[in-house]
Image 1: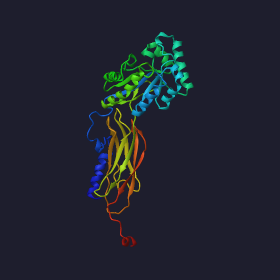
Image 2: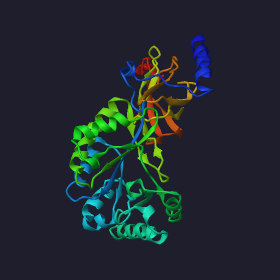
Image 3: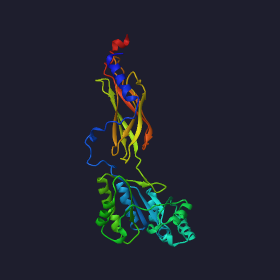
Image 4: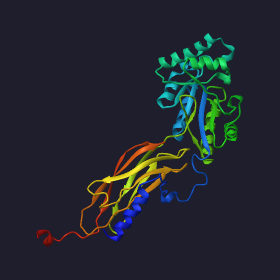
Length: 353
């Protein structure tokens, strides 16, 4: 074994066996953005009192355009009068929560009446083929220990809010957006209350793009609500590609890992290399790294060192494997890389011998 090969093997032992590592960012990410995406905290948008036949579809289109999740707390009687709008929400993949049948103050009702308000809405959702979640929002935020007990007895999780847009009071779209943005708290989970079923809802819906753009500029990520009403950090998918290596130099092969979007917490995936027509330890050194993506990072590179030899070989291939994900979903686990030889092909005379 030559000195170069020995040096490379020692280097590989240092980088491919041991503690998790943070891969170097892609070249175009070397200059940090003013505010890293998702670094400021999470925002969950919620909309009450719908659906409204003319307005809810417009809201759904805005959320889809900006790729933002949301939860719609629907009033059962309004689902009955606007089933197409409700179905559009479900078909777009947004979460539907129970906002009672008649928008009653639950603390003013008996236990039996509370259950009737909730169950009647649940039946209406089922009758229209709508997937109801475990989430419910007491109208007006009117809740006490007794109401919470009744809701939990029905298998539901009550969800309130941390940011009240005040859209129900009136005001322009710009004023509503400013109110929401002013109340966002950094490094926390923010649940925003808006309405798509009150008189001033057109202005509130018009405020949504302003809120999304400004919050993202400040480093917030938009998130969904989990089954207990908790704000769930975005879970991006990870995919990759391999830039081929060469014995000339030698030049390492490079693995580019891509996240589908930023997240508010560090995530990681293990990257390893395995033999194909190229042999690990003979043609290349096989790293085994837990590659971490810090908050706001969506790209990372991992090098696969190539070993030079004196034998001519055609283009050979090897496998890059992604596994052991934390906070991400692996889109494709196996990727193929190539190694190009720098040795001359044998002449016809040598081949004949």
